Image (cartoon, rainbow, N blue to C red):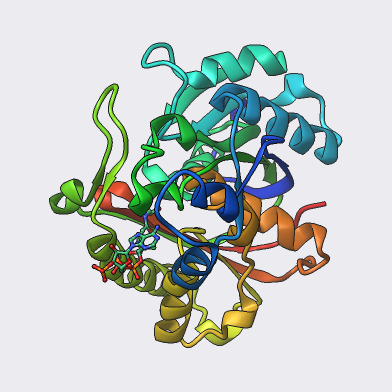
Length: 314
Ligand code: UT7
């Protein structure tokens, strides 16, 4: 902890992890009454990864982010794990990840469903303003454990994975220029999972509200950043459905070509989806220093969150 409050933060480095087991749409054809063509046309998903534990995937992604950042793990003073599929009810899965990574710091879970990583990122910037120096933010999920594999309306969508970012104190105002978080608890029944239950979803209600929530969160964060959609170089949306992203981009006036999409190979990995798509864009050389990036997510709750950052990482 540093005693000097009021300081900026930047995202330094990224890491991701996916389980080895690939479940293709053809595999799902053997399990439920569906088809590869239907799944691709309605969601954009071709295959997804399944397996592992939320803590294990989180630790794998976190380790890569720490290594890429070239930092000493002991310099991390907080771990925020966004997850809606913790390994246990108690303790927080973040504590398990802390032990796996050998960190000595505070650790907590954050559940804002698929918006969780963006909530965590914004919270990390706030903690740094209050005196922390380096924070590891991870989104990790094993949704396959809470998916009903006999329900064709949900099992084609959800999957497992993790993405991590090191956020650190920096000179000046930092990389976060605008942000917005929201929740509409009136829509709780549209997507939920009870203890020991499986995910229940009203796909139509989520679809319609997701497009509106993404537009609203994006516009509010752009306005706070004093930027227009034209100023955005890259959009990293929650990977729930290609058609939701297309519709949101259209409403925002941002070309779909500016998005980073990994849903075709990952499915919907909830809080892991935004860091997975951000890392993919970075690995593909689509992210340069100074680029304005819009991260925008929505999920059960119904939560939504957006952040406008300027890339300043490695
Ligand atoms: O992180 C947030 C999580 N959730 C979401 O973002 C989900 C948002 N919703 C969606 O992505 C879409 O609503 C779905 C992909 C879930 C469904 O797409 P849709 O275009 O809304 O399809 P639909 O529910 O209107 O279903 C159309 C038809 C129905 O048959 P009938 O009634 O027209 O005869 C369904 O029974 O497709 C049928 N259907 C399927 N057919 C083949 C539903 N699921 C399947 C399936 N395979 N897996």
